[in-house]
Image (spheres, rainbow, N blue to C red):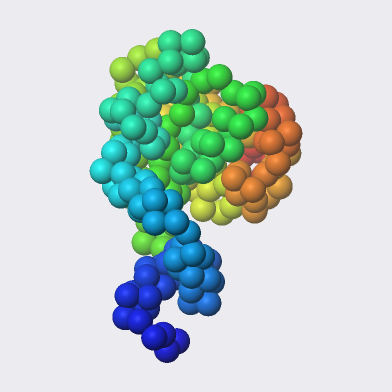
Length: 206
């Protein structure tokens, strides 16, 4: 793409790094920003800069937070005896939007995928085990994608946590096989966590 300005080209290249954004879409975004008032453009750039400066990861569950411990983990009214294990922050947000779950979370930061070079050591699995070892946890809900990689991660967690004599459950199959939680509608997702089933039962059905 030949552009009349080096700065314009550089901005387009940066926007094109976003998932699902090609050069033409990136150019449209950049041209839109150029039409905005300077004050609005500065506000936008300052907000982006703050993402790298002020956003942290919760030291307990590894969710995105502005504080060392996120608002969910620090909320005493949440059920801290229940931990819902999710792949990433998008799944946490999806579950929170259902207003049906009142426990805490643990964000793995991915799922086991040998084909993509992601193994157990690349995920936040050891911190999860440490949380269980510290006591007080009664149930682990494995809310991972209904995919081969998600099921592999579920089974790995099940084996690692089996010695702790916990209730281990997984979402009911209201979420279709192959679906990612972030794309499920709130009603279906809410029912899936309310009607969660023991993990052993889900293995037997397969």
